[in-house]
Length: 85
Image (cartoon, rainbow, N blue to C red; front, side, top):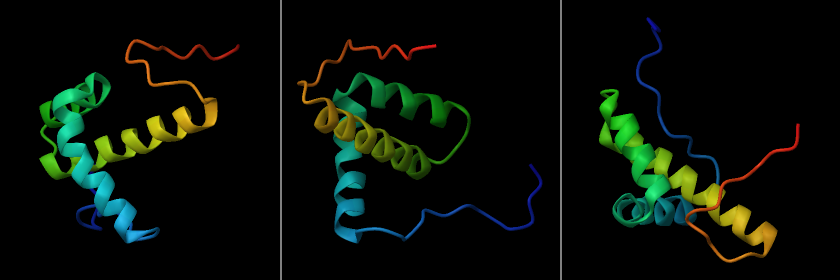
């Protein structure tokens, strides 16, 4: 769009140490986690900054870890969620 507000920034709400750890973990996730690698490549292919892509990967890691903790199942890379209609 043609927003006049400038560039979007990451929110500073929340635990700073946890946010920092998730960002640092996103570097390794881009190399070894298939879902995170796909997100990173898709965002950078659109011409977005690498830092923005890493923040999106950190968000994906947070969602994955919450889903694992909530379901109690071990991580399965080939798992595909099926939502009821």
